[in-house]
Image (cartoon, rainbow, N blue to C red; front, side, top):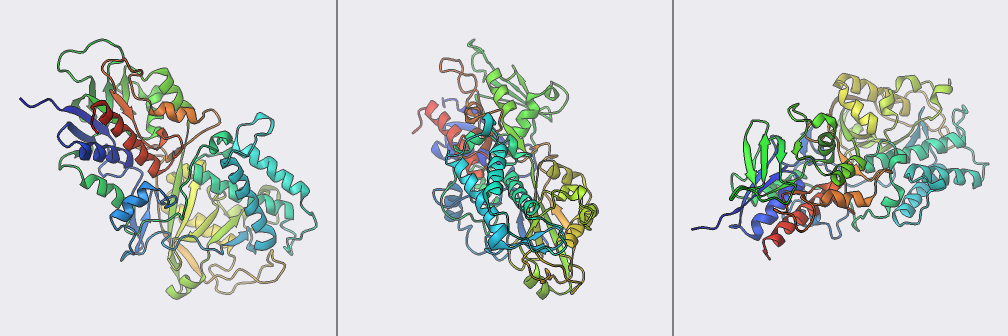
Length: 532
């Protein structure tokens, strides 16, 4: 008589879930009865490659964050996914070395004497935070407070005689520096997903780890990584359209009926599955929804745990930060394709922070509020007709509520404010902040269509990725990773395991963090069953 196989259910077919499944299957093909349940109708989770206006774009995960020691880079290399593709793809040429920084109103900013020093200051401060050399002012644990204190010190000690060169006195040096520093803060919002970087935990920054080497994108698409992981599983392992609604598990030490698996899963179509172990890889956003009152049994939102998750798990879920980052892709219509390929810059935008009190800002009222914390608009690679802007926090969430026409109007108004000659090949000149009379010259262009991500309102994610908030610490990431029931002497053990980027202490918010977490939980089970 064949030995009974341990039943393992994996919830979610994203990077963490597919990595765990692949690891378990390849380590011991005959030991487990393995099934992956995915609520959506595709695999990949927050990895989703798409096409737009003839180019390949990434709706979700975009970067291999450093090629040195990265498991994602290793997977992409093994599968020849980095070889040049027949289709042009997002950020195929990295970032340009000479971005154009423009202040609202169309004034180009002197890179060497104004923009460059602010950029260097900001990045040195973040480097100090990540090496543990930053200290909080007055006990404030937030990154935002630390950055602002150091910025104020910089403004107080630098030579105050510099001239912006703006002929109409719209910009003082102080408010231009303020706008440039705020621009860098907005970039940090998209890196971290924090709506306000004052909520980003300063001490936790020193625990976050990057890989060395270049940051690159995947020529044949990020989705090919998860497709490769899925291809290593037997047919029928992955079940799509299976949304988990309820998890019943045994939190005590009492024995279960003979032969009865300890975990009972109920899905939205009333399907019931019994399992010895379940690996939950849903997003922190979904767990937060599960953690609240809205997850009460029978209302159709979130996952109902019976018994409820223990206090240590619920409190860690509640404390950790969870944010929204969205990407907006824009197709341009130009006078000629040749002009577009030559003329559109990597445009970094410094918005006037005093716009409400500054009546001379002729464009301020035309730029919608949800654009004003966007740091840049740029082609997705040199010469592309597709432009890209990143949004975080409240602006990212609001972007999802707008129709395409309103977005197009807002972006075109913004381009008119920063590139005054856009829409008229040689419009009147504006004095620039370089102290010359050279205008920002841009052949006519208009945004004609858009495509955006919608992570906040997608019920399968409810946001983008995690961060360590000032209310939490790296310890909460470790608590997220603890299996249930807690303790070595519980019976039965390892009923519910947790994986996903929000369960990795040093690589949270990344696809490689999700990958590592999937390996970790698979290895936990392999060790439990004494599989080498």
